[in-house]
Image 1 (cartoon, helix red, strand yellow):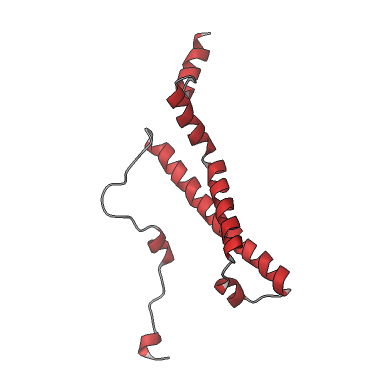
Image 2 (cartoon, rainbow, N blue to C red):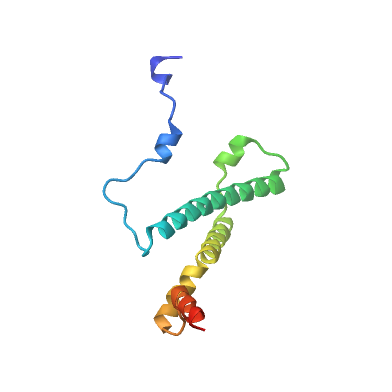
Length: 125
């Protein structure tokens, strides 16, 4: 092995925890809620990647009957297959973020109470 081939091993824990410069922007009123949402979205992203990889494996098994790790890593979906994957990702994100979308729509219509308003109303009765 030459000197060029020797590389320090990646510190994946440090890389995963790397922070962008500057203050973290918060979009929700409660930073704790935002942190939980960030965790949930990271898990959702990992699940989406796993789903795509499983889709690749299924496609290769159907078309070739057997596969290698290299075939999985280098698989390029057809345009129709890529479009179907894209549609799945959009529907998946819509399902995950449905509660936020519904809340935004309710606030625009101004016809549904927030959870704190509903709680206060229930305590009065």
